[in-house]
Length: 435
Image 1 (tube, rainbow, N blue to C red):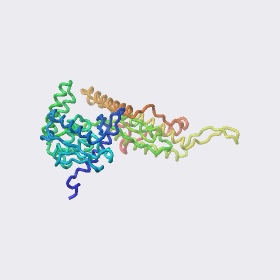
Image 2 (cartoon, rainbow, N blue to C red):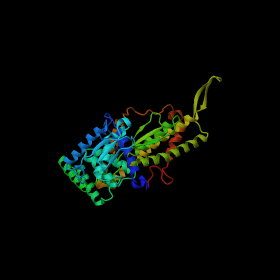
Image 3 (cartoon, helix red, strand yellow):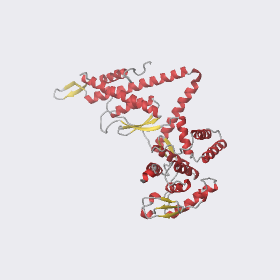
Image 4 (cartoon, rainbow, N blue to C red):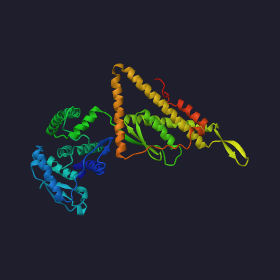
């Protein structure tokens, strides 16, 4: 029997903790937050130690805190746990026979192990009584992080577990218990004063302790139960650097994004756009943009192949007079794209306003409720976007390529407007048409 067979979740647990370490290491005193799945967390630093002896002092402090706070780990919190250095650099281990954590010291390459989360990982083997990384062990680790004052780190670890397929960390806890915990957490979040909030959190912690389930698990259950979307940021590739017309593609996407309540940042070379907003709105915007992009390019190529071309007056030195010559193909194409993107933005905005007006009419007696929901959505996206700008130190505005304007090729621009008026989201329905 292999070690993997005896401890089937070991690799996934280690992968999750590697991800947790990466998140924690990405924070700095100037940027103390980390964003995961569109949510922002401020976990605080992962304590570092210079040698195993310093980690031993930390373990003593943790166990004393558990005892003084009345945390019950089946009496194991009352036992002393030692820490010693080990020769190998690749592993940190817990030795149950002697209740000892063995950590590689700094000088043999143990820097990775001399941190609080690694020490607490090994201490969890003692407190859970589990040699392997079972569901009970994982629930104990999450609970320990919360009990030592690291609830945000516990939440991040729960997300990392979920990403590795370890979402259900306590198989013995029934859905009724999780539902009660979820309800208490919601009541705490919605409490009108600090005393009510503290009371609900205390009840939740008491229930969680009785069932050996971490509050991070209950919070995950709450999010799944409510199914409420949260704003996210998604990077979308426009095209390869140096390709002509990328700024017009960006303009088209921006107009589609605006009509779907999204905010955007654009790379300086127009090769990518990062959309900020709700996942369902981003999915809709991408689908609309990709459909319109195909139509725009196809309609433009048909216009260029028709032979109808704008002319511009230039001086012919050999003939010593002004003559008319067709504008360059790229000039006509960019003017077509510019006009097309502008008209699509106008039509999408008209369609959005009409949809909102219809929603208010349908819910005449709940119009204020609809308006509040729309306003709350706008505020959620606005706050999320503002935080993204602050966190990434983004300043300034996007400078689109304006070297070619619609007036440089008015015939092509007019064709672009007509093509945008014909544009369809699908084979069945044109933009703005009644259903």
